[in-house]
Image 1 (cartoon, protein in one colour):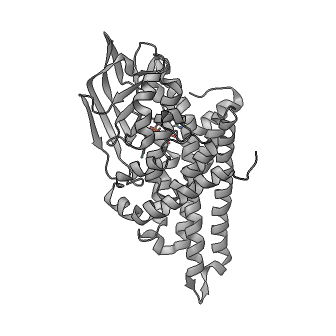
Image 2 (cartoon, protein in one colour):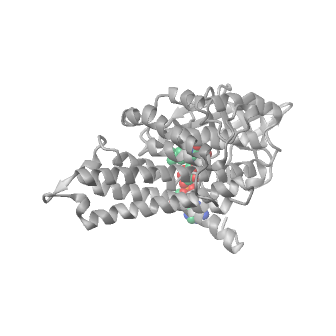
Image 3 (cartoon, rainbow, N blue to C red):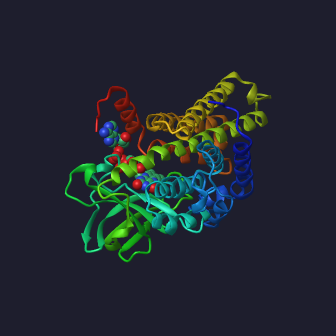
Amino acid sequence: MNLELSEEQEAARQLAEDFVAREITPHAVAWDRAESVDKSIVKKLGDLGFLGLTVPEEYGGSGGDHLAYCLVTEELGRGDSSVRGIVSVSLGLVAKTIASWGSEEQKRQWLPGLTAGEAVGCFGLTEPGTGSDAGNLTTKAVRDGDHYVINGSKMFITNGTWADVVLLFARTGDAPGHRGVSAFLVPADSPGLTRRTIHGKLGLRGQATAELVLEDVRVPAATLLGPEGKGFSIAMSALAKGRMSVAAGCVGIAQAALDAAVRYAGEREQFGKSIASYQLVQELISDISVDVDAARMLTWRVADLVDRGKDFATAASTAKLFASEAAVRAANNALQVFGGYGYIDEYPVGKLVRDARVMTLYEGTSQIQKLIIGRALTGVSAF
Ligand SMILES: Cc1cc2nc3c(=O)[nH]c(=O)nc-3n(C[C@H](O)[C@H](O)[C@H](O)COP(=O)(O)OP(=O)(O)OC[C@H]3O[C@@H](n4cnc5c(N)ncnc54)[C@H](O)[C@@H]3O)c2cc1C
C-alpha cells in the first residue's frame, strides 16, 4: 500500500478541512448546547459531493475511492462527530447499501436525493430488546397481497427524525434468528410510522437520534430491498463498511484531541514555565499521537482492502475496535492536559470526550468486535 495520497485524495481532504473550518467549527459548541446541528448542513454536504462519495456518478454520486471517503470522514469527525455521523449513516449505511443491493427503480428513486443532500436516510436495525443480538429482532412485516404490513419499534436511530427513508429490518418469515430477516426501504412519511427524538444524550448531542414506532405501516412489496430473508446479510455487509467509517471518524476525534492538547500545552504556564516543558505532559501528548497514527493506519488498511476488492470485514472490526477505544483514550488524555478548563464547554476537549464515548458502543460494541475477530481467527462462533 502506497501511503502517499494522490492529488485527488489530498484535494478531497483539503476540501473537507476547509468546509469544517468554515461551516462547522464556528457553530459546534452552539449546536451541542442546542441539541441540534443546523439541518441546512445536510444540503451543504451534498453540494460538495460528500454525501455521494463512492456512489456511481450515474446515480448522482461523486465517485472516488474509499481512502478519499475515509479522509473526508476523518476531517468531518475532527470538526463535529454529530455532522460526521449524518454522512456515515445517510451515505455509508443507507445510500451505499441501496447502490449495492437495490433494484434499478430503487436506485433511481432514492440515490439522487440522498447524494445531493435533498433527502436523508436512516438505518433501523436496533430495537429496544435487541441491540447486540440484532438477528433476533422482533419487528414483523407480513405479506398482504402486493403489500407488506409492518409492526414493531426501533431504538437509537441516527437521523431518525430527519430521515426521508428508513432502511428498515423486519422479520418476514417463521425462520428463527437472522434467517427470517428482510430489508425494506420505508418512506418515513408512511402512515403509522411515528418518530420520537431521544433527548439527554451524553454526546453526539447535535444529532437527531430517535425511537421509531411502526403500527400497521403498509408498504408496497417493491420496497423490499434485496431478496426476502437476506436482510441480515444486507445489514451485516452495510455495517462492515460502516465500521470503517466510524473508525475514520474516531481518527478525527483523536486528531482533534492531539491538536488541542499541543496548542494548549504551548500556551499554558504553571510554576513559571510552559506546561509543554513538563515530561508528564509530553507523555500525555505522545500517547495521543501514537493512538492517532495507529488508528489511522488500521483505518487506511480497510480502505485499501475495499478498493482492491479484498475481504475486509475482520480488518474493519479491528480498525473500529482500536480506533474507538483510542478516541476515548485520546480525548481523555487531552482533557487531562487542559486541567480544569477541559471540563467546561468553552474549550473543545470536553465535547470530544462525550462524543468519543459512544464510538465503543454503536455499530457493534467493543465486545462484539472482539467476538467477530475471535471468530475469524478460531473458526468458532460465539453467537
Ligand atoms: C447515539 C447512538 C446512535 C445509534 N444509532 C443507531 C442507528 O442509526 N441504527 C441502529 O440500528 N442502531 C443504532 N444505535 C444502537 C447501537 O448500535 C446499539 O446501542 C449497540 O448495538 C448495542 O446494543 P444495546 O445498546 O442494546 O446494548 P446490549 O446489546 O444490551 O449490550 C449491553 C452490554 O452487553 C455486552 N454484550 C452483549 N452481548 C454480548 C456478548 N455476546 N458477549 C459479550 N458481551 C456482550 C455489550 O458489549 C454491552 O457492553 C445507536 C446507539 C446510540 C447510543
